[in-house]
Image 1 (cartoon, one colour):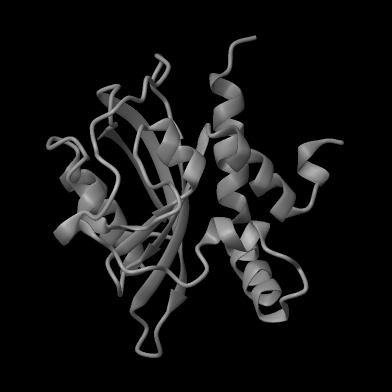
Image 2 (cartoon, one colour):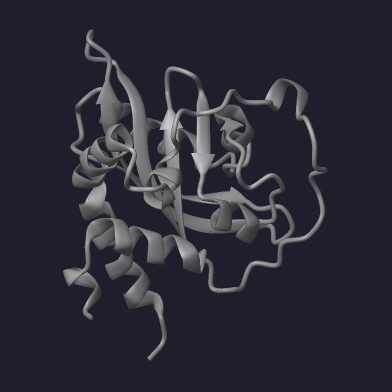
Length: 194
């Protein structure tokens, strides 16, 4: 079956399973971010199921790229751009800096209109394979420890459909971010040889 004709949740699940595509779920109000487990493992980070503080990831962005990345996010959060998109170098845990393309969209705002949640994708554009290795120990990260997110995006894709509120949340979020997947998969297909 052509991937474009599959249900959105199935396309997301297949993309996540390969680990080539990272999905992030950012809670701006809590300053936490949850990355898909295969993505964190690909980059060599422990505790793949746990969320991290936004600081934990921000300090991994190359110093020459952080301003551009943050400007793109601020412009989208403030409603100046329809989506967030940035290309930057991200320091992995073992294979140095990786060039990544990140896309995202605000999926939830509070009653005052402030963005509280964004969901997006991250694609590794580096032409060498990742070589994750040691580096960060397992266990608590002190000031880097993050509060858990309520139903991170990757869990919305894998939980039992019998949970009605989760099904509604999953459908709402998927409807808002499905085009991000299509753009990212198109970009990924263009990068593959052959």
